[in-house]
Length: 301
Image 1 (cartoon, rainbow, N blue to C red):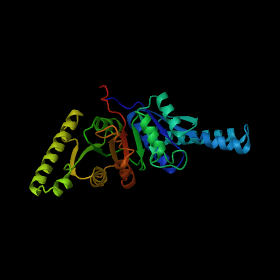
Image 2 (cartoon, one colour):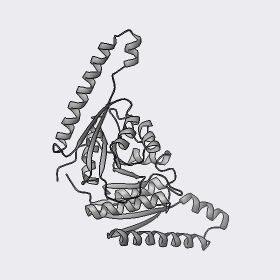
Image 3 (cartoon, helix red, strand yellow):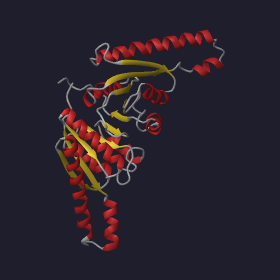
Image 4 (cartoon, one colour):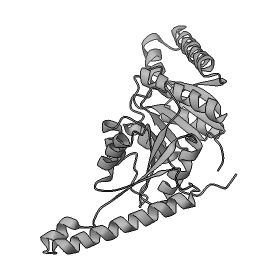
């Protein structure tokens, strides 16, 4: 298992972005990773400014310089509060392009964003910008919703046993090495309603349910073993029902402050962060969400 080496946190100076940057700084302190705090000045906003004031107006460089000072001040406050070095990067252009370009430039192991923003990140997580970012990037993404009062304590890892969920189980050990993993598998009886409508008796349906639970249990314990989790150092949750609802329920019932999911599900077209499951988790849950965007097994350290 390789440790985090570089992190990139994006900020628009909103409250949600400040929480995300603070969490990133705490993680940098815990893991020793190099942290860069970045901001993107909207290229379209600058173009509109030029349209109104004319090219070369002194207001434009003044605006950029004021933004740079605000970014450096935010980085300095984080560095003092969390006792870590915080580097800065200011860019101009579309948020997705700027974040993606900088993530590639520094080979970021983790991107950190607030759940919502007020400026250039306003639609990044729940809107079209996030969809574009996640389709392009292979970088893990941490969506921060909570104030970082303490290290992550309990991490709910949602497993559907796809290559992406296998990566999620490995990723949580890098990002939250001190958190106790709670492994969740939500199973359902295939075509249960259609079986009942077709006249299949309740005993047969219950037999299928028992089989489905047994398969989910076996695969969950096998996944934990493959990931190197030691018995007694993690908890199992095998529940029946819709995954999106069960994730939120178990996050609260198991007192988890981090939820970990894969970018895709069993099929590559099933993009979890972009679909109903993670939208429901972000809307109804309260924990931070860590998304694994890779599906290949990383090399051992």
